[in-house]
Length: 171
Image (cartoon, rainbow, N blue to C red; front, top):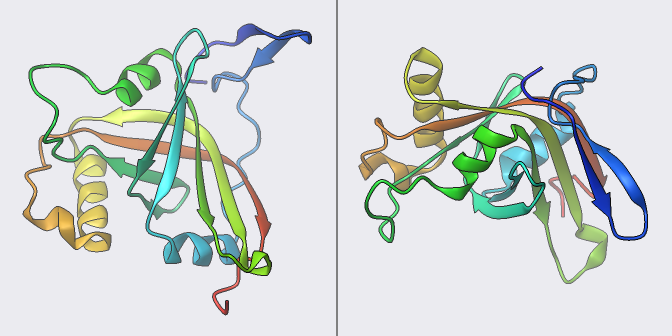
């Protein structure tokens, strides 16, 4: 596993356990229809939590290869100094993460989403880091002109996939 179990309190419900990657379930990677849906969507939402289980959700660009989902940290124009992004601090404290990718439409027969849960690692160098950045650059041309080679990549080892709604491309 990549973390330890935490116990938290939920208002009126008493203690509950949080899986932080220690008790790894059997891997449930995305199915082919889920992969096709994910390939069509451009933005996901990464949910992390700090060691106190305080949630933090941010929109992200992503790419999937095998049983891993990758997110690069791009150039942040508003970021200065050595401040580490909250999502990276959270992953260092609690590597259990969720990514949800959804499609909204005013015609609710077209709604759909795929949720990916897993254990995140922060890659700062190496072949997986470089391959993930190349994959992300090929999916998002906007990254071509950015100097991202020295930025970390979040690698999420997909442990569970859940989906709902219309995942069809024919909407």
